[in-house]
Amino acid sequence: MRNFLRFGFIAALICGAGVVGSANPVEAHAGLKSSQPAASSVLEKSPKEIVLKFAEQVEISFGSIRLFDANSNLIVLPAPNYGFTNDVVDAKTVRVNVPDLEPGSYLVIWRVVSVDSHPVQGAFGFQIGSRGKNLAALGVEVLSNSSASNFVKAVMGFARWLSFLGVMVLVGAMLLATQVTGVSRIGKIIYGSLIVAVFGSLLVLMMQAPYALGNSMGIVQLFSSVNEVLKTRLGTWLLVRVVALLFISIIIYKRDLHQKPIWRMAATIFVVVVFATFSISGHPGMRQFSALSIGTDIVHFACVSAWMGGLVTMVLLGRKWQSESPKVISWFSFMATIAMPIMVVTGIAQAWRMMEGFQNLFSTTYGTVLSIKVVLVVVAIAAGTKARQIFKGKKVDSEDLKKIKFSKTIVVESVIGLVVLAVTAVLVSVPPLSVDTSAPFTATLVQSNVIADITITPATIGSVEMHIVFSPPGGTLESIKSMTARISLVNGEIPPIPIGMKSIGVNHFLANLQLPRSGEWLLELIVKPATNRTLRFSQIVKIKN
Image: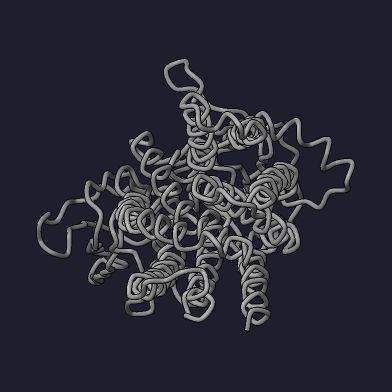
């Protein structure tokens, strides 16, 4: 049975690595809010530059903006730069100069890195003049070839999992070490977990360049790119983490001084710094009121480490700690009883902040993965509760612990914890919210053989650009006599608002308007294709925040 439990624990480690390695995270965090030219827009003349505005700060050291014409030819552009707002560098805006372009269709392929280290890419088209071509298929092809390989993604996910695992077990083992006074392997566990944490962090540092660029790299290129990664937010905090872990190793080495308050205080400070490096370089550091998010995340990580890290440590200790088990388990039971509710509360609060509520819990990848994590945590808590009931229900000594099923429940609880950690590593790679905010709304309506192609860019609150093009199913249509439009909220809170449309081509109309609210809007078009003929088109338009 002991061999079976050990086998199950090792299998959980492999399973956890497989979860993060096989995950195919959505490569989007700082969503594109708007662009100039706008997606699907029709211009009268060539733009002087391409400007991209993002919801969060981005890094362009591993980014690019590529421009293709209707014949799939790449138009050479200079390196992109940040924009300026009130003469101050705006890291949410990226721009690049564009040469004079001939009339026709063009496709913009952009790729940047969000400040929380994840690649963000997308594509949109625009048109110069009245004749254009749909380049959506080209965009899909180019984007599919621009992502990092599955191997790079797997290694990156595994590296994140190792760094989480190493830090979690390190902290759990350090806490248990204060209670284990006899001879045990806890020192080896502490140093082993510290090495795993450092190795995982350095592996993240090395893999960031190919992960961000979407390119395969040789060993020499990997090492040469580290210097560029260190200039990013992620690289800076990875370096801080490694340095903090090295200081912790020095404190661990001076174990004879651990009883002094100054050394315990120093260890606590460095552990908090290590936790902070995950939070500041990840999702919490990007949200509004980031200081509150970072603080909540640190408390959450500390509670997880105290509980899950302690469990994994007890499993790794094996029978060496048997003589002191009652004392250690009693202390751990008390600590876990405090840590678990705090972990749950901070986890729920953090998820609510990340997702801006739970209305999108089952409609986003982040919500789905989070739901899986919650279920696993509930099961782990149930297993832990049962274990502590078994322990408290008996007056146990070292011999009794060999006979009861307490050790089995610890293994089950820790196995689930390892899988929870793997799911957490996947969450790091998934955006909390849908970030495709710049995607246009498109619809095609037909009335009496007249086709109306509607494009609204972006389909979000604020300033939007509306294009309406009329044509018959096959052939040309004479210029329509007149066209009016209006828009209103479906729920009636905002009455119909007239839209000022202007003709910019044969049966091609343009309007710029402000949409103050998200929700479902009713767009109505009154069209006169002939003097004695009137058509009405209507369409529900979903506007996002």
